[in-house]
Length: 273
Ligand SMILES: NC(=O)c1ccc[n+]([C@@H]2O[C@H](COP(=O)([O-])OP(=O)(O)OC[C@H]3O[C@@H](n4cnc5c(N)ncnc54)[C@H](OP(=O)(O)O)[C@@H]3O)[C@@H](O)[C@H]2O)c1
Image 1 (cartoon, protein in one colour):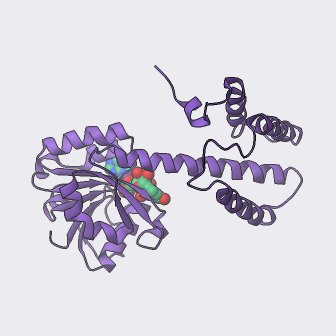
Image 2 (cartoon, protein in one colour):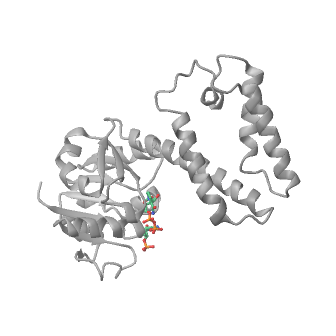
Image 3 (cartoon, rainbow, N blue to C red):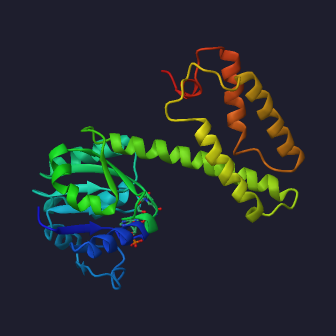
């Protein structure tokens, strides 16, 4: 594959990708719904999506959502291309798009970006990919410039699932941090004082829950955790802090205690048909 890359979408993430590829020496053609966003980048801005797609075999999309992707990708120009979709979506959206793209004669790889724009191209940036294996390997040298390119399987929906699973862990953590800051604020403890403690505590807790944790060993009983969690909720109400972000965890802990041994919390979250 040549070193040409077409990128559709120049939002915060697309601009970081375009700049990274340009710096790495790729010949980058871009198109964005609002023109002019490439002025400060060392890339060629195409006048139409058709012109952009026709410029490179590798076509990367990074727009707001899948609806926007369908709106911008010109189906008549896709034949013979590899489309790499780096827009966040659901596994089903990825599978549907794979069918749509391959139906127009192109190869399809879906991706989930685990980085913020300033992290793109730097150590720690990770992108999950899934879909057509050969197309991924052919595009891999270009994709690796964005960060570690981790291929997770031929099912095009798989990368989205990993992406959203990690995102849900992140938002759960952010929700907890927001609640912690609100509790602190209820007694005029400023965020800059509390945040370093939150960081240290989370790091210590991550060490206490190693990746190879034995689920059979009970480090802290669920009954104790449910009781402690009740205290956290009561204290929050007493301090005038809403419990919207944290209350569902309390309900889950009570369900786990009621269900008895052998029921993990993730198990209890599964909706059974
Ligand atoms: N930013 C992050 O930290 C981050 C991290 C991981 C993954 N992502 C994912 O990367 C994708 C892009 O995020 P972003 O931060 O770049 O978002 P953004 O800054 O809000 O940019 C959105 C992009 O989508 C385009 N767009 C929106 N609606 C459109 C439509 N109906 N038709 C055509 N183009 C449309 C916008 O074009 P205009 O310029 O014309 O509005 C712009 O290029 C998202 O799926 C996001 O989940 C972002």
